[in-house]
Image 1 (spheres, rainbow, N blue to C red):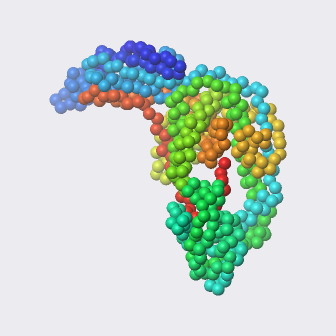
Image 2 (cartoon, one colour):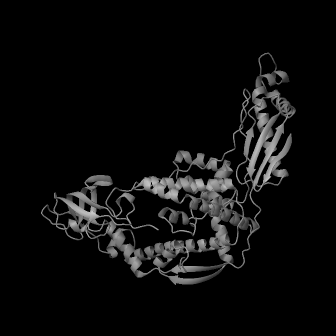
Image 3 (tube, rainbow, N blue to C red):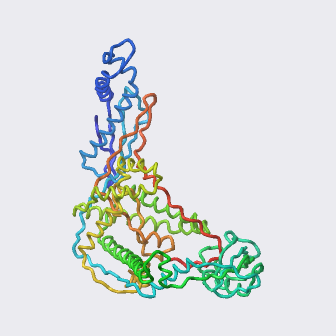
Length: 535
C-alpha cells in the first residue's frame, strides 16, 4: 500500500492511495484459510475442500471485501499518520478504470478542522435581565384559561349582534372584484371587539342577525404579512350562520376545583410558576447570545467550507419549509433569496462558534454521562410507535453520528452553563416586554452549536448580521445558536463495497440523519386575520 499527498492547502487535504494486486491477493488468501474449514461441498469431507475451489466459489466477493477493507485501513492510516481531524466524512473515490488484477488508485479528499486554541474563560462579563412575574400576568393567564372553557349558546334568530358576541360566518374576500387566494373560508368564529381581525371588519358586524348576508369594506394594513394584500382595499361577502352568547365561567375556587385543583390560589400558583419558567428561558436566551457575541468578537479563523455548506443547507431547508406554509410562499421565497448571503454569514458564525465551544468543552472536561445519554435516547424514542422504538434505539446506539445529533444540544447547554459559572454576572430587573425587546434588538443597551465535526448539524439559534434589520425569518434564525459538538472527532466510514464484475467507484461516505418524525406545522387558516408584523 502506497500513500502520496497530492494537496495540502489551507484546510484542504488530498491523497492518492495505491493498493496493489498482491495486497488484495494476500487478504483473499488469508480469508480463504479462515473460511475453508467451514465450507461444505458435495464429494468432500467437511473441512477438506481445497483452497483453490473455495477461492473459485467465493473469489469475487472476497476480492471486493478485501479491496474495501484495504481502502478503509488506508484512510485510517492517512488520518493517523498525519494526525488529521476531518471536518466531515472524507471523500473516497476509486478510479473508474479499475479492474481486479491491476493497481487500485483511490483518491481521498477531506477538509480538516482548524487548530483552535481553547479560548480563555476569564474576563467574561454578562448582564442577567430578570423579569419578575406580575399579578396582572397571572390574572391574564387565568382569564385565558377561563375563556377557553367558555360555553357557547346560540341566540334566537331575531337577536342583533353586539360587542362581545361570537359569530359563525362564511366569507369570500375580494380585491378589485376578484377573489384572492386564501380569502375564502367557512364556519369561522368572529368575536366582535376582540381585535383579532383586520381593522373595521368586526365593527361592521354589529347589528347583523342570523341568516344575514352583508358585504364588508376594509383595507389591509400596510404591514400585512401577504405582499399582494398590503395596503389594498378589499371587500368580504359575509353570510352569518349563527350568533353565539359566550358564557365565560367565573374565576373562583369552584372553577379551579373543576380543573382538579384545590382552589383558585393553587391555580394562580401554578400559572405563576409557568410564567417564571418562560421568563427564565428568555433570560437564558439573552445571556447566551451575549456570551456568544463576546466569543465571536474575539476569534476569527478559517472554518471548513464543507461544514459551512452543511450548516447553510440546513438553515435554507428550514426556511424553505417555513416559506411553503406562508400565506404568500413566492413572496417569502423572494425575500429569502435577497438575504441569501446573510444566511451564509450566519452559517459561518455558527460553525466558528461551535468549534470554539467544542474546544472549551474538551479543554475543561465537559461531558455527557452514559446515564444522561440513555435518557436522551429513550426520550427521543417516545416519538415513534411502540413497534419502532426498539429499532430507533438500536439505530442510535450503532450510528455515532445519530448519537452525536442527540447529544449535541445537551452538551451545548453544559458548555454554556460552565461559561456562565466563570463569568462575572450583574443582575437588572426589567419588564417582560423589555426583555423580549432586548432579545430581538441587535445593538440596544437593554437588548438583551456547540458545533463540531460530528454534532449532526441540528442547529437553531444564531444572530443575523448586524448590517441590516432582521426580516421575520432571519429573526427566527437568530433565536438559535449552533448546538454543541460532541467530544469525538469524525471517523471515516468504511468504503462501500466495490463490484467484482465491473470497475466501480467507491461512493463518498455519507452520514444519514436520524429518521426523526417531522413535526408538521398546521397550515395557516385562510382568514382575513390581521397579523402583527414580526421582527
